[in-house]
Length: 273
Image (cartoon, rainbow, N blue to C red; front, top):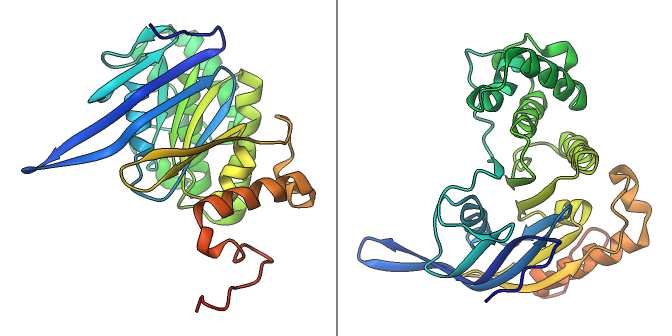
């Protein structure tokens, strides 16, 4: 019997996931145990291919564990989990629908009345700074505006938990910072719980309340680290905060032990060319 605390939203208990690839067996994650608390932004950090996205798929019920158990809000996840909303790397906007109509899709599926849909779409457009673009189409938007639209559509589903799989990975640094700040603001205002996959150490240090560091294949948790910064933080000014530097350095040292002194401002070791 797994003890579920009042603050536990998702619990992974000794979870292993194995896939069959032809005649071979491939273990994506092995013996992973993790508790995700309500209202936290939990970052899954690690190299590509270490099973981070598999953990999201397990939380969403898109696949089941080979061994172990996934519990959401006190109940075992034995199929599709309707209590989560998922945002992948691609925005998947429908090109024939306007920004407002794309955002409204989850509400249409849920059968909400048109008047309520319009009200909520207007609120979400304002929240992500797209009020002037409600009637624009995806091919008329910049990459950042498309991501904002996808984020608003994610929020339109009004789920307690958001699953995000490297949603800002393809963006330039300035745009990424803007959208990270937007995400942080929205999640605090709406009290969302977030499970966020990245292999970007700087992104993890900026967004995380808790950072779960994964090691190589098969994926396993190396360490769970709490961010020393308060939940309310100005991402644009993190570079001035010594606590942020210490946290980033700790993540660098864990993920790149041979290059721990190659982080920004560090010294390149003599044996690294």
